[in-house]
Figure 1 (cartoon, rainbow, N blue to C red):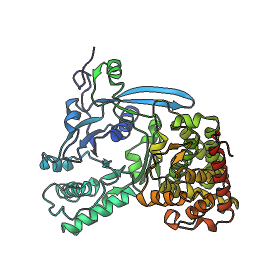
Figure 2 (cartoon, rainbow, N blue to C red):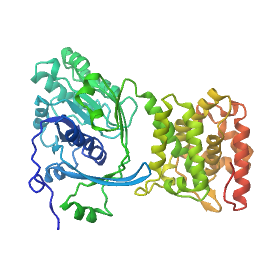
Figure 3 (tube, helix red, strand yellow):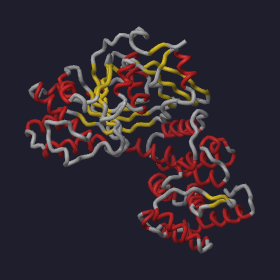
Length: 479
């Protein structure tokens, strides 16, 4: 027997002051940021509520308010070799509103003396400037435009008080997201000809934090929602599922760290002066391992990340690639790198997430350039030799772009230019020419990889072995 989920039925009053204004009501923010804030409230003296701003005209604010901001986060995955499945009722969300319905209510949120943080996730395209937002007095269409209006109202209302500046912590998946948000706000200040004193207040009394976020959030569990609702005893229409792993790296001042004491709540939230090495670690180990694994596993007949990692050959391949060829190119403490790598392997093995290799294969050439090639080049620079497994992955990728394996078509998904290149290259049926043309293509790699001593011969050797074994319908075991 289930009942409606709200603060009355759950006997949870809303008594905390709103300290966080959150732009975005989607699955990620609710399963990541709000989950973290809920734990902060439980384990520290943070004592803060979240008010959600719906960032676009159509969204979920009404659904959030129908449940008085309450909902459950369900974590499923593997941690330290053990299956984890736990459910948490999130109580820190005070409510949500649509600024397109009430611009004045939106501005009034800036008058809150308890407000300390603005947190956002408005997609990668969210932090953008539009010259069409010409009027400061009507709701801006873009997220940075709205923030500019909010900050200006706060500046006026509190007479430019130094202690009423805010910490802005964007979670959008772009590099230097905090710096980008600040620069975009400055563009709006200039466009709207707002006072110089306001610009200086924005620059000196507000903190813009660059961040890195990491958690897989599958979202609403439509296949298991009934059993979850029966288990929690409520008709929760905002359930969100996520993996147990979470990491939030925030480039921030000591003041922001003190105001958001996540380190006291046993959470994987790191406050750092430079998050560059953490971004590099994520791109090279997590994303790089994904990209390196896909063609090797796919050509072997595997179709998901989990079965690939658990396969005796592909699993050993990716472990050796990570620990023996990627980690040696990184500069963080070895213990941290190895722990992160072990976490990545467990995340890949998560039985609750079906991650198709072919979906990761989207735009694999550009992904290899960004995620894997830097490890190849850095390994060569430091060791004076070439990384066998990462180049084996490159060979597998070239063979993958032939578009078929054992007479079965591969649904390649890349730019028309790249697909046409490989179609033409493989039409020659000459692997030597294909490898040379691919490695020498500066449009792919921003350099001619045939100029690196030994690289072309090594990749060609692997491609030829692939052609030989696949032509005989053998199970590919090359390394």
